Length: 135
Figure 1 (spheres, rainbow, N blue to C red):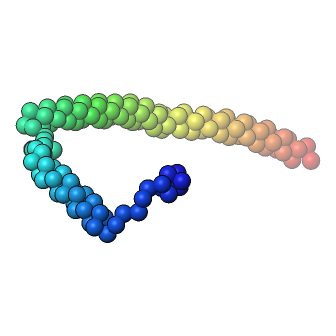
Figure 2 (cartoon, rainbow, N blue to C red):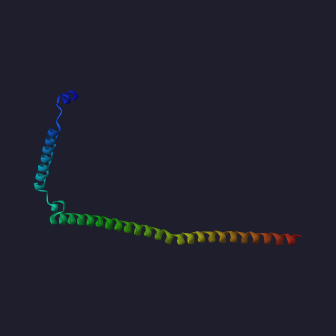
Figure 3 (cartoon, one colour):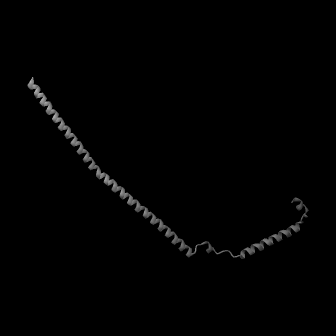
């Protein structure tokens, strides 16, 4: 590429001035033409009323679906909590009955032992009284 540039003759200062003048003229004409080219309206960047209402209705529908889902989840939680509380209430109510049964069993066992001890002490007293009579 350098040999090609070497073949170009050097320009005189007046030719260089003519070339620069032509380049500036072409650039000025290009800038003038660019000012006449129609730019898109600024409204094209904004949303139309129809698009806005569509977006609003879509957003509202989505929010309603999410709200219904949350309500359904809350209802399911309430139902499960109620059933858990009911089951726990039944268990807690059964505890005193179990305690009463256990205490009754213990009481009857204690009474049996006391009765056995009374019988044994009666026998012992009988044996002791006989021993005293024989002595």
